[in-house]
Image (cartoon, rainbow, N blue to C red; front, side, top):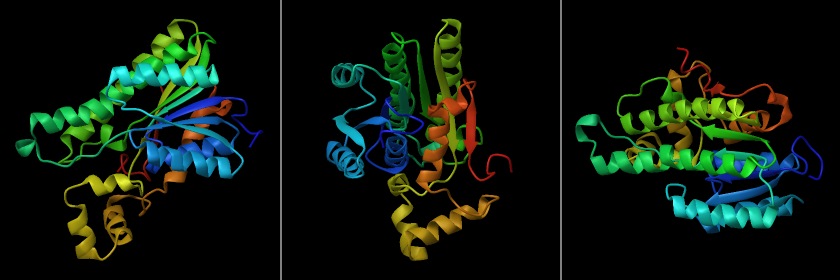
Length: 264
């Protein structure tokens, strides 16, 4: 793991204890990055870090509430004290939510926005600041195909993810106009097999009715042109592309990875 596309680089991944974040941590570490895994679930983050070290990679776990700026301040001080630099930042922490607008409460709306949009704004802000001394780096914000294609019953989630796309474009232009080589891109997965789905109120009912989580994913995938949901590692491989020099001319880009869902 001392060699690879990200050798000698430090990569931060929020929401790294599970799902897309965990997969990204494993893939980036496999390409030589020293990975800082940040999550509210410190135990989960430490488990992923231990898994990477067991594969001869370099990883450390940190506790972070992405929605709170004081938590970012403390975390970034520790990160830079430990590693002295930041080359890649993957803002993948997020929550899901399902509620018709007529039943959506202000509290539920604010909760989704605080994690999915404010958390990514703070992650982008602090990553840009950390990368400025060297004048280069790659920031990848995890949005969703729900940010470009409306999904009934997912107003808060969809709006938060659309906001991530616009935030990414603005940040990319600000970095370019400042004369740096800091690139900012977003990735827009569609359906991915991750534990995030278990946050849906209807998830347990659907699993009980159809018999298994795989059966639910198969039913959901009927609306996807490729007729399946992605594995988390497939999204992580796309994140690797945006993190590495393979995408050196890409900034302000929205990489849609949804099996054709948004195009249909």
